Length: 236
Ligand code: URA
Image (cartoon, rainbow, N blue to C red):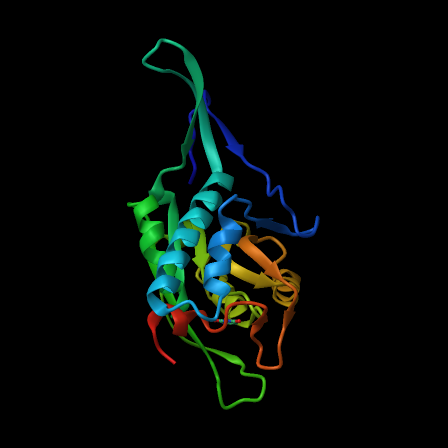
């Protein structure tokens, strides 16, 4: 894929805010981030406001991610006659978004708004609530045809232990996706999860809005925001 005319060159923004030099992790910077993040962290925020502020933050996060992707750069002319460097993303058809069900659904609509031609896949992974470790279990996947030749945006708003993301990436790799073509996008991650994930898949990239320090005994991110899916979908 990515066949480019020789007159073009491809620019890829570096993963500038590296959490660790060995990992391709970029932590989003945006002046509105702390305001929006505070609203979704706050335990008094109701479901409607949680959805509203999450969606605004997710929009910024997805645009930020796109900004890091490889681009085609050419010299073009503006209506004034002046020339400028014209940046274009590879066509959406080179991309698939893969949603980790259920919370990842919150990131699908906005990804489709930004990339209307993107194809979508779904992976269902759930914690085994009976087990002491709350081990994640793989249930189902439906991936778009040709995914092995695409860049894959894997979306799930929370990276806690890294267990679900690990199972999802294993499924993508089994389907032929190259590890280096996987970009895992989440809103809040934590250091233990990042370490676990990159120990297994050192070639993926990750974009997050926030890295929190710890997990509690129930494997929730602290401070985190509680259960993202329950707060976003109004369940308990
Ligand atoms: N999933 C969530 O929704 N919240 C966490 O803190 C961890 C996993």
